[in-house]
Length: 247
Image (cartoon, rainbow, N blue to C red; front, top):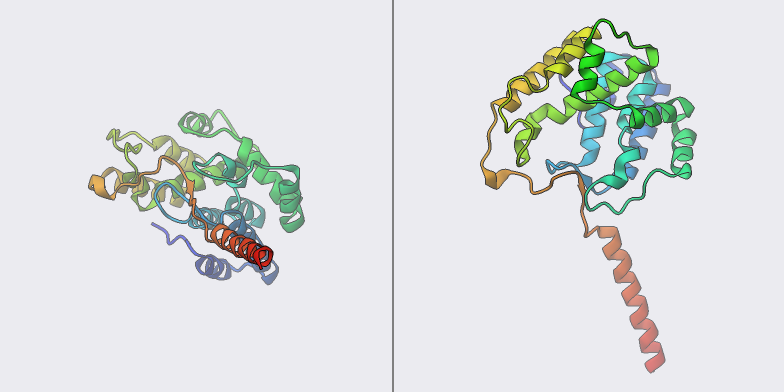
């Protein structure tokens, strides 16, 4: 299994090792800052900060390409979906959100994020593109790599074993093989091998029920500190106003 970054520092060190110029490192920092801002307080159903998923997905893509656009798009691939997560108070993608991405990262990255959000992908689609009769164009290949990276990240650290009724609970030994086959079809042998290893680890991991997540999907903490601070300041202001009237 290759070593994938899960923190900002690890991702930057990976980029430095792979020879990315300073201008690309600066754009990576901009992308990370934006991803962190947009996912602040959001957690995955496995109870890990959402930003970790985004960073590691970008790291997986970085292993497969030196093109910074799909790397940045992978680090922000979920921004169009944030409003559908359980308990989230975030709104769906607006024109101003898309403009924010264009201003910060360019039209190419924003376009990839938009195309990614509209690109259907699952076992059936993976099987379709794994068929030698179906040859993806350059754009579709980019999106397939991004989707495979996202899918692999979903299965690292035996993630499904931490979820009640996870996809591996059925014990199906064929689960996920469509993704492995697609990675091999695209010539991504290391990615295919890592995917196979991740699947096997998940298949062989069983945890006590007491350790499993109680969340069915990604979620946002309700008692956000910034909200509590705003309410506290508002309460203090109201108390001062009341005391002034009573004086």
